[in-house]
Image 1 (cartoon, rainbow, N blue to C red):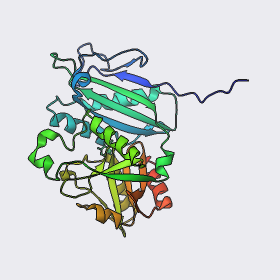
Image 2: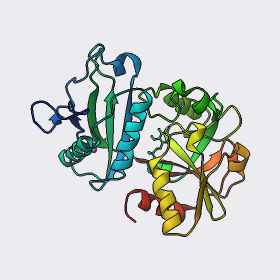
Image 3: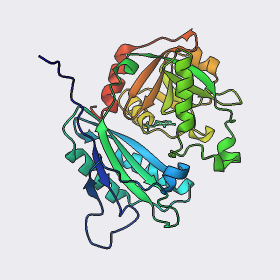
Image 4: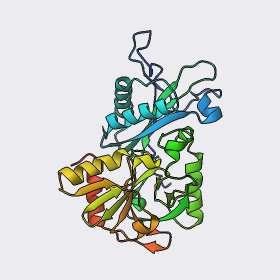
Length: 299
Ligand code: PLP
């Protein structure tokens, strides 16, 4: 008898040629496409220059979370790189179509990609790719995090807007290089620190810090992406738990001296930091599990 390996559910691809307005043929503006055959031109500016923006939306038991805030952020990122505004209503429909077409799985990762398009055409390329999420359980149980210098001051977003701090662009090679460096150091993820000494964000996540009954994150003005997961948690902490939330520039020593810290994102959800470099941090597994339920849209 041969052992059967677990089958990976097939990803779903939805192409959205009408992403910047109503399509001329009167169709829905998007269509399902075969993800196993090539769809992207080698001259698309995302292939040659990483020129585009994206979002990753989590869907739990078939329900996507925070679609509106994700698509609004996509529009902000597009504006920051001088791309035309995407049709958010059409994209929301196309996200639903991608989820509906996917086999039912507990956790789905839905990427919305919006690129500057094939060189010379001036027409963005847009697609949605839904796939079963990675198994994030080891990260949700707690992870070691390495502090790495981003090499930019917290004023860079204001003084050098062309560096696109706070935009979610498709040039993530630097972010992925940072994660590889963390792994070389025996850690699972990264907390970036600014050149002026403040904790920023992870390469794909937002910093959350607990100080007593107050929960803090980095101000978006420091050049970090304004996270949708932290916004959801902050609303729950304030409105359902009566706790205080805020934005504050924190040093690495502040984070080390805190009552707990997490890296938050839409698909991995709340990953508690067990160690920041060699420094051990308190981990509250029960609170982390509650965060997870809130971020899945359950509370
Ligand atoms: N910061 C960066 C750089 C990210 O790439 C991400 C998400 O991928 C986040 C923060 C967290 O954002 P969200 O909570 O909207 O997933």
